[in-house]
Length: 291
Image (cartoon, rainbow, N blue to C red):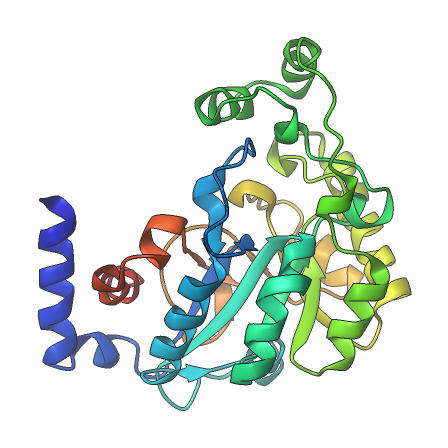
């Protein structure tokens, strides 16, 4: 019932032009994670809510492009000015290989730019994320996220190690996407740790290692921005991030922005999960709640 009410309200708002007026001269940044083949059997992977079937991904982007201007995040950051009209930017988190195999062909076909925020430990070291351990249920993952790192590591010892190196992009794939001119890359930390749960020096060292690897491996396809892992922003790194050459950082709060401005170190991004991507009736709601 709540979903139906949301869809009905947002459809009415769209029909009256209220949704588009809401975002006139503003950018709505969308966050995807994995893009998977259609009809794929329910695998034992965790966090499947963050996976979008490729046909849903394409349909949503076509729908968005008909209503909003697709904008490259790097161009918006460089201009430091509001977009000419309501705009959207596509981003991905982590650095999954399916971004290359399934999302990139769609972006190329539609001519829509995107930014992939890479957790470089996954790409450089082929290190699986801790939540990829076999047997971890989604509810357990959410519980473990809230624990201190040492306590979480101790509890994870009860689960077998993940063998998921093939899940991640390679630097060769990163460079190929970068040469297209459509896909650029930003920082997502090296180890994808929650940067507000470690000492300041450790958080900065993690971001610096990530940014150094990006500069070494894809220097011509970078977005000078960080996406805080899990959206866990901290306010005491702004000057250090700027000294590294970064110009903004993104969290996970819903919303839209005219220009980076004073909020540049915790800008909004709007998550697109499997349920929303697969229900066209919710797409206007996705935009409306980015207020």
